[in-house]
Structure formats: structure tokens, C-alpha cells
Amino acid sequence: MGIAHSAHVGRAARLGKGVVVGHNCVIEDHAEIGEGCELGPNVVIFGSVKLGARCRVHAGAILGDAPQDTHASNEPTFLEIGEDTTIREHVTIHRASKPGGVTRVGSRCLLMAGSHVGHDAVVGDDVVIINHVLIGGHAQVGDRAVLGGAALVHQFTRIGRLAMLAGASGVQMDVPPFCMTRSTTSNVVMSLNVIGLRRAGVSAEERRALQLAFHTLYREGLATKQALAVLDKEQSSLVRELVAFVSSSTRGICKGIADESGNATAEEPRLRLVG
Image (cartoon, rainbow, N blue to C red):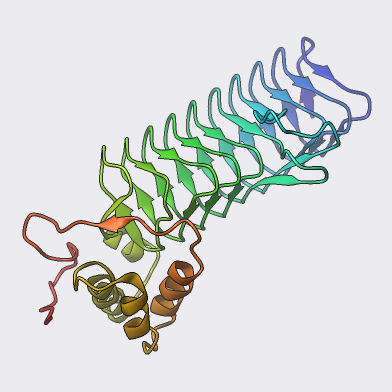
């Protein structure tokens, strides 16, 4: 374990084996740093934080500061970050706002420079958050989602599993799993996240089932309830996941838009979609 002479580590902080603490870091009392973590210079970790093993936190990141919420309680709240997550320069993640509440970031995530996760948010495992993404309080981000640079996620909004937010897009409505938003446009889903599905090992059969479901949801001109009634008969587990997410949305889901060719996705080979 190497602690720079200029670092300040609280006597009641708990550091695991092999932790490296860079110059001018501040680790408050009661913070928990898992074994093998590496903290770059000028990192600040408040006492509300539990950092999983083998995380890497780069220069200037601030973890567990007070929530930016005028109604926040003065009672103890927390921030938990899973194992093997990388937090780049000047990332900020705030602890929860309600007594006993927890802001959570999962394992094996990558939060790039300048990104922010607000109070009470829940970020799943294997999520990639590109530079300067802003995630509002109480938002939820599903496993393996990718949030493009400077994307904006409104408070209480949900981003589904394996969804992708295009750079500079903004959402105040839920983004269904496996879908991709349109760059520089708010609340618009453009297609399936086909590349993400392939990288995740989703079979061609399952991708075709999702493409047909996407067509039903966004291309048939059906009301959402009508589309869900059609999709409720599907046997694909991923389609059922999509239906469950949309059915449970309280904010409503992002609207759809056709691509220039009028097709639902860029899937190859293209399916002949019969209306």
C-alpha cells in the first residue's frame, strides 16, 4: 500500500490491501476503499463512500459529496461503487438525498472525464459513460448501456439495458432497452442498438425478434398500448424484457423516427417487414 506524503487519510477510513493513494488526495473518516484500488492525485472521497476492489480513480474526481438537492436531509446517506470500475478525471458522483439512501454505480463501468452521476441514481454493470455526460438525480441506467458524449439524462428517467444514447442527445422520457437515440435530438429513438447487441453476443434470431418488435412499437403507427398487446404474445425473452420495461414506464417512452431509407434498423441482412 502506497500513500503519498501529501495525502490526507482519516484515521477511521478503511483501506484494503494494496491501495495506492496519490498526492493531495483526501479520504475522509469511514470511507471504505477496496483492495487494489488506485487513486490519482487530488481525488476527494467522502466518508459516505464504499469503493469496490480494483477501482481506478483518476485525478480530480470527487466521490460522495453532498447531493445538489435543496430538500436533501442532513441524515447519513451513501455512495456505493462496484469492483473494477474506472473513474476518469474530474468525475463527480453524489451521495443519496434521503436518509439511509444509496447512490449506486455498478461493477466494470467506465466513467469518462467530466461526467456526473446525480444523487440517488442507479447505474448498472458494464456501463460506459462518455465525457461530460450528465445523469440527473434518481435516474436509472441499465447494464451495458452506453451514454455518448455530452448526453443529458433528466431526473427519474430510465435508460434500458444495452441501450445507447447518441452524443449530445437529451432524454426526459424512458429509453427502452436495446434502442438507440438520435444525436442532438431530445426524446427520439432512431433504431435498435445493433452493434451493441452483437457485441453482447445476442444471437441473430433474437436480434430479428427484437427488430420485428421495434417495428411493431415504432413503425406500425399503433398506440403504445396496442403495440404492447401485440408484443405480449412474443416468446423471445428479450422481447418480453422490452415489453416489461415499456409497460412499467411512468414517464412514457421516447418517440420513434424512421431512418432515411424508412427501415426500422441497420440490421444486416435487412428483414422484409410486412405491415
